[in-house]
Image (cartoon, rainbow, N blue to C red; front, side, top):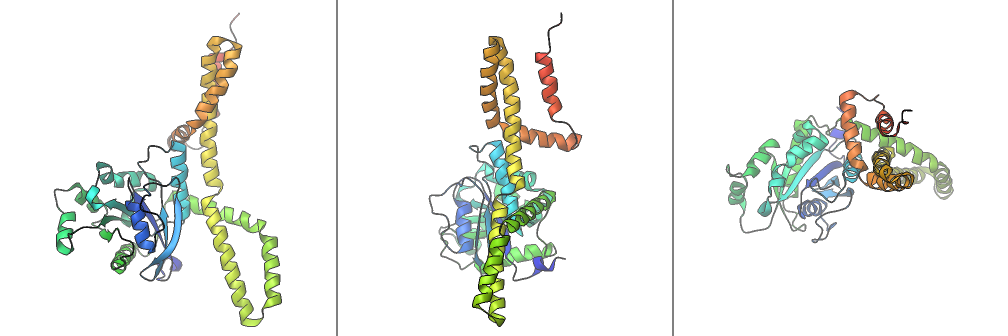
Length: 348
């Protein structure tokens, strides 16, 4: 067992997932104990990480992408899903599905299926349903309302091992913080005290660490200069304390930057756009060929631009293809065959 991950004073990494509406942001405010998101926020353009304190326990709360957001392109959705994994790497201690108890939608009930698809089957072992509520019911009456057998919500809770928690939309009410923390800690203890992990999370952690090393090298001269300044100002135990504080600050800053921007995230988006541009350009030239040489040039340019916008879909398809035929398939063979089919020299 990783002692760092089972330590009671370790920062908990929590991934908050919601559908439409402000419930996931209400939950984030409630966990952090401050208004990180205003009441009019229903969606955010990218994954975000905030730090706070829940009943005396340090927590890092990550808001992932809205899994039902139709305004996000395939490429952007994939990039933000990967970013949410980097922000919770090497893995989250809890995945919290947040909904408004008074406005449960059909999409909300399907959340577990999407989470399994995006984060892995075992992620449900670390999942809990969080319900935002602010009304007249309380105590046993409220619990009975949530667990009514005829409500689809009961099936979703069952998929999460029967784990759920009701929280107040008013983040200033922290009366149930201890109860929520205890539920998360019990869930974690049942899994041996270890955070959730998967191949994707292992990849995310590897890419983040690789980026950290690059950033550390870039800041080596600056760090050494800062150490020398500290040595001139302090001595003895005070110097050690100041050095440790400075090093911890730099490490935290570098880690935060590496989680938000690294080779995995850059490659994911670039490959999707590149594949889309290539496929779009070929299709554009095919259509443009009808109009002659000028049409080919114009069609290729326009098709490339349109294809780049749709590149995320191509990237997703390619990744599924790699899963089925192996990682060594030559993706450019498709373009070669396609071009030869339409542009081969005429027979004499």
